[in-house]
Image (cartoon, rainbow, N blue to C red; front, side):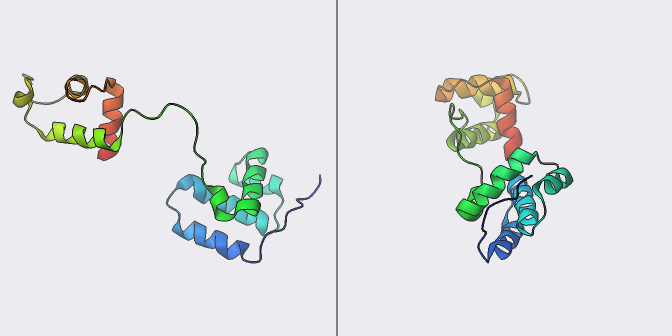
Length: 141
């Protein structure tokens, strides 16, 4: 097996230590932890087995760190449909939950996600599923 032909800057270990102390994202923390072991000289197979990364994923993160620094450990943006639930829609949903149900024409004492989705669609024109409403509410609590 060939060894990595990468040259890390002299401050690579202190940089990774800083990332480990400051990051709040578990994925970035695990990546920094694994890359730190590789920078210290551990074999990638050993690190991948110990920290339960696939070898190819670990190799990718090590190369990204070598070429881009700490920014290489972050997730890249992904293509796809943008989320329907925006910050403004979440705020509207929270205001709706705080309102009296009788003002909205609902005859129950508590909201359910289906009724929230219906009223939200009437007020904003955005049609969400019951599950999307539940997830949005769960995220705010």
